[in-house]
Length: 213
Ligand code: ADP
Ligand code: MG
Image (cartoon, rainbow, N blue to C red; front, side, top):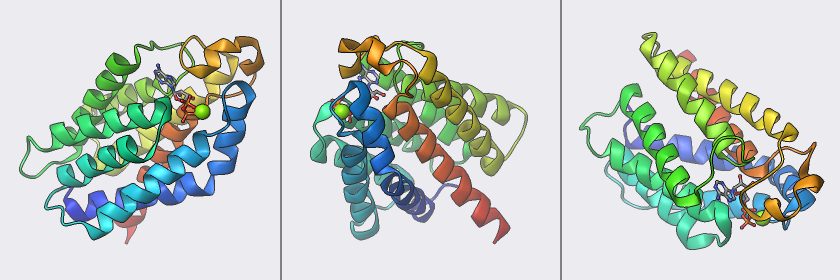
C-alpha cells in the first residue's frame, strides 16, 4: 500500500536525485532553451520535500497534492506548471482509494500524463517530457497487467522513461521554448524528459531498497 510515509519518501528521493543532476538538466536546457530547467526542478522539489516532511498530510494523495502545489507556486516556466499538473492529477486519482496500491499509482500516472498532454498540448515526438512519460505509463500498465508488484512496475516505468528520454536526442522540438531553435537541439536530449526519467528512477530505486530491507 502507498501510505503517507511512503509518498513522503518518494518525494524526498525525487528531490535528492534531481538535485544531484540539476547542473546537467540546466546544461541540456541551455542548448535550445534558457538554461533554467535544473534550477527550476530542484527548487520545486526542495519545497515539495520540505512540505511533505513538515506539513500535516494524512494520506499519500495529500502529499502528492502538496507536491503539485509546490511546483505551481515556486517555479515559473512551462515545466513548473506541467509537473504541477502531473502531481495534481496523481493526487486526484490516489484520493479515490482508501488504501492506494500499485494499480492506483499507475492509474495516477495515466491521469497525470493525460493532464500534462491537455495543458501543454504536446504530442509524442514533439521532444518534451511526454516522450519519457508516455512510454513509462505504457510500460507500467503492461507490467501491472503481468501481475507484477509495485517495485517491478516502477522499475519497468523507469527503464521506459530513460529509453524515451534518450530517444529525444534524435527529435526536433515542436513544443516549448526549444521549438524556436529546433536545429540547435538536435543531438541533445530534452531536459524535461530527463527529469521524468530521474524521478521515476529515484522511485524505482527507493522501492527496491525498501523491498530488500
Ligand atoms: P521553460 O521552458 O519555461 O524555461 P523549463 O526549462 O523548466 O521551462 O522546462 C522545459 C521543459 O518543459 C522542456 O524540456 C519540456 O520537456 C517541457 N515542456 C515545455 N513545453 C511543454 C509542452 N507544451 N508540453 C510538454 N512539455 C513541455
Ligand atoms: Mg528553461
